[in-house]
Length: 440
Image (cartoon, rainbow, N blue to C red; front, side):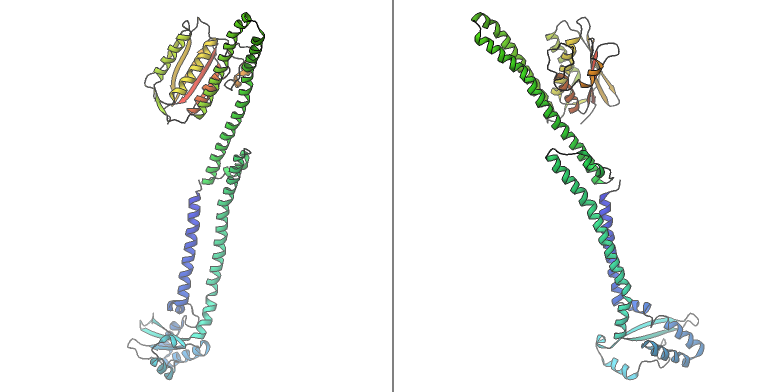
């Protein structure tokens, strides 16, 4: 992954290194004698050429070389031996030397004095060269010699500006797109493809965009499901309310004997309405559950559900297979409600002479809890819609409202798992809760 951190770090580190290097270079160029001795064309290689003439052709040839050099470069040169004595007269006038000796502040002199030691490679003799460069000539040379460092500084500034601009744009543009996506999400007009290009990045901003896409998709699904739920709830509530209204109208016009027969029907419709509202509230509670996970004693929970089912249907047998040593964490109330709905749903269609089968199995960190009945099953074209709120398969008489499987599916998703619904190969219907073990 290309890290945005390292990109920013490298850019600023490079900028600091370039500025420090150029500052050091300019400092040497402006203030160091070694810089002038090494690069000034009027001094460069003078010591080697003078030494060659002095040792091979004598003092007169060496003096002549210094005079010609003075004429061309306007630089005075003196050469001393190891004892400090002049080897040749040089080109520095005596009265100038006397003037220099009287000056206490060297910066007031009209020339700059530089010294250089040179060891002859042939004789091994060491010579001391004293150069005096006019400050006017030195200033002119500084302007020419600093042209390329100034150019380098300008180029470096341009490059650093471009790098900074690209770095800034690489951060601000994705942030602008994220801000726009947040704005759209707040107005419920968010489109996932708006961050598709940003999500393909391999740095932290790409990870953020992918997480934001998942969050946006989840929120859009929740908003859509809530809207659909409101539409379904309003539709489902109309039927019992309409029946209550009709029964009340009939009761108002009926004689006492007929009215007495209508009261049980009114009570039945009220019970249906109360059951429907309870299931709707249960479905909403599953989505809003925010408490911490707790350890779940699955064998004890299944045993309690079997006892409750036996009270409602004493003739219905329930076979439960639970392995030992299970460690499951989650929300016990949600899981109990989900399994209770699966058992009630299976009991509606299971023949009395066949047992309901509850099997718990472990496999590769997953726990599956299957509830099977031996009923007629569900038509294949309706399997995909099972678990949707208020959906009931056509052709099956059922007193429910189509919320039991929806509650079980939401409970499975709340635990990080899923609910599988299918016809069993040997007949009947099987609902399977697949939950992660040791999920935290």
